[in-house]
Length: 526
Image 1 (cartoon, rainbow, N blue to C red):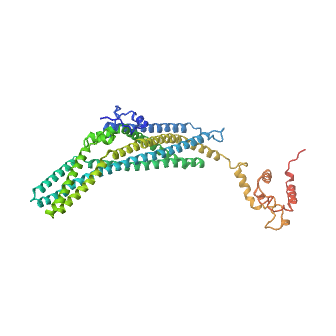
Image 2: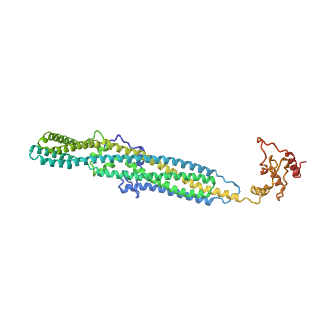
Image 3: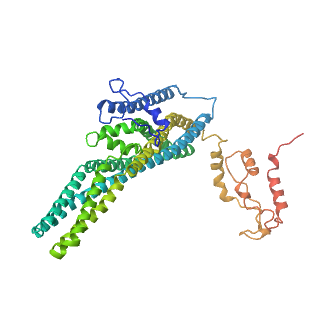
């Protein structure tokens, strides 16, 4: 029985994933129908996950070949290039960082979409489970009223009305109507098994989804941390951070390919279900429910008759007939049998309770409630759920490619840092033009030099200022002369314009003394 569905249309990406090649581990083509209990179908999903394992192997192989070539072909000495070119490494790090950040953004969106879809699925399953629980409760209460409560009242009334044959005949009629109601209620499908199945499915789905969401969240955070540590390691030129980046980069590369394989197989399997969900549900319920009942709830069309309508009608008519009989007995029998009034009122209360259960049962058995939950579950898992899985697969693919490029760039950065440290180690400490030696040669005499331009000196007044004595040092005279005209600490106390300190009065005489001391070293031009 095939009907055209108008309220649910599978999205295009589910058809795209459904058309993926379904091949088992023996490389045999398998039907793409959703059959999770079939061994061959399970092997097709495992095969899709193994494709990502092949991608991981190729990535590690390419990375190994690149690193081998890099360490074997690098030049040990390069006298011409004193400062290695780091442009390629910088741009590679920048582009890789941008790709990782973009992939993490896509991953956060996909993780949220998948979680929303699965939450809508489990929420709809819980609602359907409550509906089935209500149906079972109404049927159980009505059966209990007919089998236990009504039977006790009728047995006592049968003893009371034994002298009157017309009253006992009414009791027999009530018992007959009660048997009709019991027969119709027992013909109802047993929802207890379906209810247990739905509860187990919803609980297991919620449990798996929680840990899936948490695992992807930790993976996204790990990617961001590695990206930040990479930037810090390249900025500080820290070899320790680069080693940590290599170790965690390889780990994240493996996790990215693994998540890609799991996400792809899950998306394909879910899409196989979403393309033909009705067919799978009919096959799963054919042993416990009739096809008319299943199609009634799956399609909820006005052209389909309610399979419970006949039973509900007989239930209603039997209750109405019993209420009329009890009302007649209450009108005439208490005058003859006063003790029968209590049991008749008890039967009337049971019939009123059964009528209330009948109205509740009629509303619960209507297809609109369960069909609404069914559609919401399909929309949640097939639209938001599969779409989120596709975004997560894109995140895994981008992250895997980005970390592969990052692992290729980090060894090159290590090499550049090693060349830079080697160039600094090659500087001769005895070179008189070495800045560190010049500072070291000058620092011992810094304590003997006093400022001669300070307006307020702790040594005395302005008239007590004297030019400093020439320092005795083994440094050549041209070095001392250069130190005079360089930026030296003895000029740090010179008052600046605008500070309110006038220039010292002894400044011309001091400058004249200094000029006289070094007059012999000044060049002479003819």
